[in-house]
Amino acid sequence: SFTRTGWPPLDEHLGGLPIAELTTLGAPPGVGKTWSALKVASGFGKQKRRSAIFSLEMTSGKIVKRLAQYTMPKKVLEYVYINDDMLMPEEISSIVSRTDDIEIVIVDFAVLMLRGESGQQEQAMASIYLNMAWIAKNLNIPVFLLAQLNRDYSGGIPTIRSLRYSGMAEILSSVVLLGYNPNQIYQGQTDQQILPIVEGKGYVIIGKCRHKFPHNSPGAIQIEWLEDQGWGDRSSWFPIVAI
Image 1 (cartoon, rainbow, N blue to C red):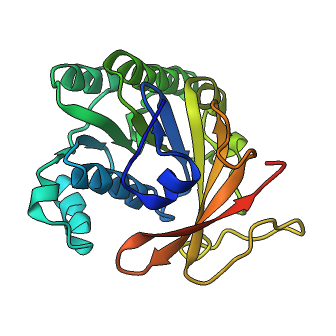
Image 2 (cartoon, rainbow, N blue to C red):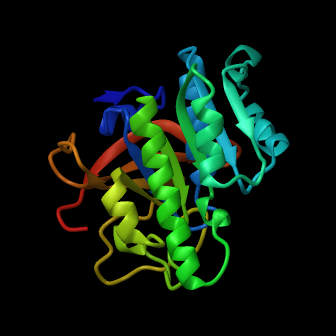
């Protein structure tokens, strides 16, 4: 039920991404959400598998520049479709449904789809999660959604409840990942700090997995952070019993 992404940390410690299901990655700005998306797209491209990136935050030119930062060959970049238009979730569904060779959909910065008052935004976020889950199920491909954290998130290690509209994320996402990268942003610590702060290292926390956890419990993937290339490929595992 999982497919290999070509990015070793996810493949080794999660088994890849679930097919026909939604995976949500939440993190504060600047800790590596977009780099995670590009690592996955690059991994698919190296397998000659086509990915579609819908970026509502970054222009296609900036994405290509980042991809070039880790010297992605043109033959790999050819497998990455990038759309930086300000689309609504229904429009993304329509575009992907008309294309039969896309093997993963990546949506960056879903919060920018939100419009209107608080109640309308909550309804809109529900629509985003529902549409992304629909794409995954009906097209039998993984969908990787990058999401923002709550406005009242005050730093430290994030949990599922730190996600904006976490209820919909938890219900509709088969896997919930959380980015924690103290090398990139000051996030503070608590007396019960459970993940060590190591220079040149960050974490992708597996907060929820509808399938069996590969290491039999929630935990965090500690991943090298390269100043000019974002997330690296070398990683290790930290079990977290209560998250």
